[in-house]
Image (cartoon, rainbow, N blue to C red; front, side, top):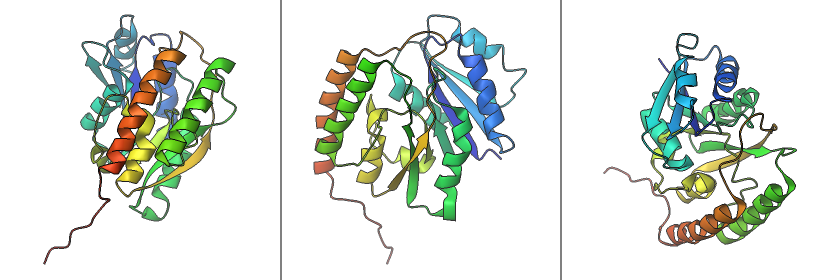
Length: 239
């Protein structure tokens, strides 16, 4: 029985996916796990590179969007298709280190406490350009003040969470940047853990600082509205 599903959204990452898939497979062994790559409308050889790996990695599943729908939609697609009750998500560019997965899983499952719904990675010694690090830090500061979610690094793609908790959240495009706030809105407990961050080996980032900042600001107001329009979690009692 599959207990863990690793979900990896990718777009135009043909040069990165093979090495990343092998690293993930090694990191989660020997747990019964599946590795789900969601090809979000790639225009290069990403799908072909993944298909070539299937004989080597029987646990690999490949889902494909017919057009680019964004990272949040790709993660959502993967989680909906997942068979495991525990999900790990990470970026497809290879900058998140799969070697951190066991530690995140151990923290999530510690004491088998169902209130702990997610362990969010916090990137240590980020290997991005200085302007991107500055933009990310600035956006995190604004988001943290507006949403009061205590998120240190909301942009880190490496997270371990319970599938049922994720599916309880209101979905919208770009929601991956607000998972901590949305989880806490539903009454779940979220913890953070330091994770490694690696230089990008191939390709380039799909995000521009200005566009990401503009979209992020609009979405932050939307999440703030969601927080205000929610009476808080409740556990109904049958009588």
